[in-house]
Amino acid sequence: MWDTFDASPWPTAKRRDKVGATGPDLIDAGDFAVTRLGFAADAKQMEVLRSTAKRGILNCSRQWGKSTLAAAKAVHRAFMSPGCLVLVASPTERQSAEFLRKAAGMARRLRIRPRGDGDNAISLLFPNGSRIIGLPGTQETSRGFTASLILMDEASRVRDDVYDALRPMLAVENGDLWMMSTPAGQRGFFYDTWVGNTWMGNTWMRNQDWFRMSVKATECPRIAADFLEGERAGMVASVFEQEYMCCFQGDGREYFERQLVLDAVDSSIPELEIDGPG
Image (cartoon, rainbow, N blue to C red; front, side, top):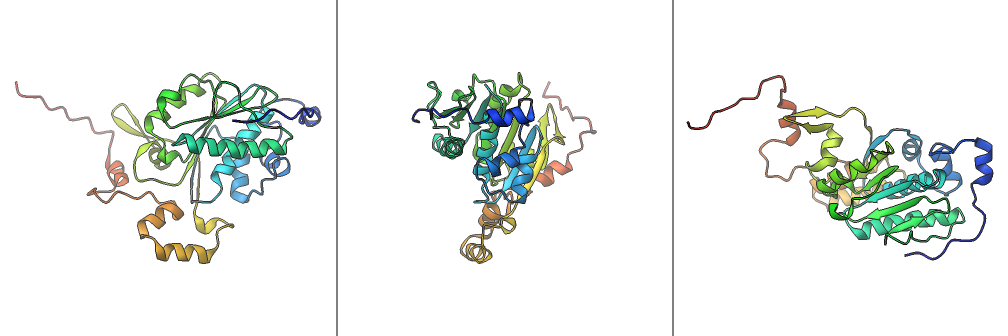
C-alpha cells in the first residue's frame, strides 16, 4: 500500500531527551497534533486529544473532523510508544483505508515515508516498530491482535459482533478504546454505550466510566450557519437531526421509544417465572 521509509533520522530523539520517559503521554497529544502534525484543532477537539480516559465515545455531526481527530490520536500513540499496535475499525475496508491515508499524511509531516507492515494490506509501520492497522467490518478478520489503542470510526455502523471481537484485544495491555460516529438509529453497541446501558445477565446496567462528548453541527466553527439552514430546508427533519444534530432516531415502527422502555425497567423486581403446561 505504501512506499519505503524516508532515510532521515528518527525525529523524536531530541524531544525524548528533553522529557525523559517513554509512553503515550510523553508529549501532550494536543500539543503534538498542533505543532507536529499541523492539525488546527478547535476547543472540543483539543479536549478530546488531551483526555487521558481509557474509554471515550464521541457523538458528532457530519464533517466535524472526527476521523482526522482519531487519526491524530493514532499517530501520536504510535509515534510516542515504541512497538505498540493501534487498531482502526470501520464499517468497510474502504473506510479503514481512507483513515490510514489520513494517518499516512500526518506521518509524512514527521518525515516518515509511509509503508505497510508486510502482513496486513491496510497498515502503517513506524520506524520504532509501532503499527497502525485498519480492519474491515467483519469479526472474522478482526481477531488475533493485542492492541494498545482501538479506534472505531463511524462506530454506529460497525456490527455488534465486530465490537465484541475487538474488546478482548485490549486485555493484555489494558488498552484504550475510543469510538466516534454520527448516530444510526436507536440500536447497537454505539447507541447503548451513549445512553449508558449494557445488558448484564438479565438486567441493564449503567455505564459510568466513559468520556462522552456530543458536538452538533451548530457547534462546529467550520460549518456555516447558512449552509445548515439550506440543509434543514432540503432534508427530512429526522434525517437532518440525525446527521447534523446528534439525535438517535427511531425507525418509525416502534410503539414506544427504546429509552422510554429501558427507563421503565426496575431490576429490583424479581423475574416472573411461568411454568409451562404440565
